[in-house]
Amino acid sequence: MERHDSPDGQVLFVNRSESEIGSKGPFYLVYSDDEGTTRWGYFCSNCESVDNAMDAMGRVQCNECSNVRKPDQWDAAHE
Image (cartoon, rainbow, N blue to C red; front, side, top):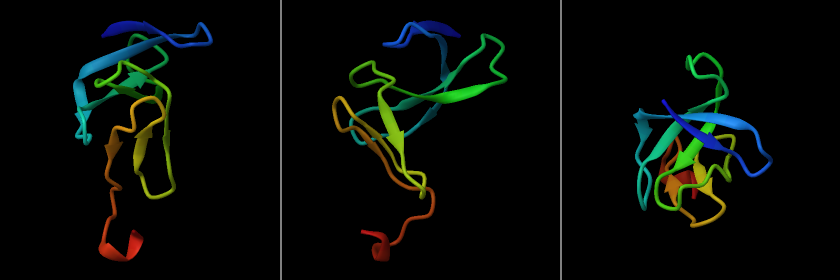
């Protein structure tokens, strides 16, 4: 796992072997411990930021570069 400091100084661990497809690049899973037991969020590979948000449907959007992962349960009615 790769160590990464969040903007507020928290030490996080990026697992580059676990990823989700994004529109501009993959999102890597981030953990708050180096053993990978406590999931924290996502790391955007496009801009190397952890500043992102997930909505109730599972869509992840990076707040820095607008990289987007589509929702887990998606159909045309959700747009």
